[in-house]
Image (cartoon, rainbow, N blue to C red):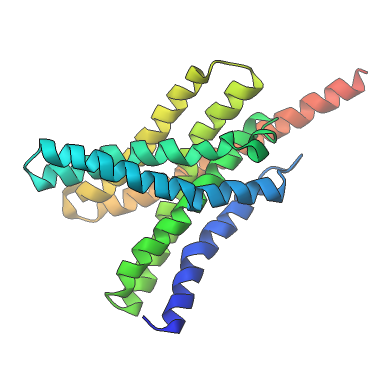
Length: 245
């Protein structure tokens, strides 16, 4: 790997998630989030969440491997069950950081910080995958890293945004933390479905690949629509309250 390839690797791995983070943050029109808390959430996803996920996935993988002799079954369980569970557990913990948590004063904030933490995670994941892609050739790398920059990045953003919304809802409405659980399960389901589509690939005709990309696209559009809706509702409520005082 030469110096040029290393530079391209880092740019292709981190630039799309950073641009997506700016896009998600700016989806909110009123009371936009502070850049400092946005990047702290991103860095959590790119560092601590990745390290914690690797450790947990290795631990769970060892348990599964010792229980099943069929390596194919182990691989499927790892991809469809363990990875979604572990990654959707570690990424949204960014919202528990003091700097981020104090900014959770609107329901849509959970969507935003959850998405950004997911994008940080996808940036580092892109880097790991990109190293492997480069070993197969530069053109191969450019094609696959570009695909990951769309599908995997948006998937990580949208799935973790769901748990993030559950967190902000629990904090703002002073609900029990158990109320987060349904959103966490939904995040796992979306992540697992995406991985399943790529794994089974719908009878090998490439339909699974395109279905996975479609899922990532529609999921992030749903998240953005919810941010816009909640942002508008909050602004209308604030204007009505001010006009009545």
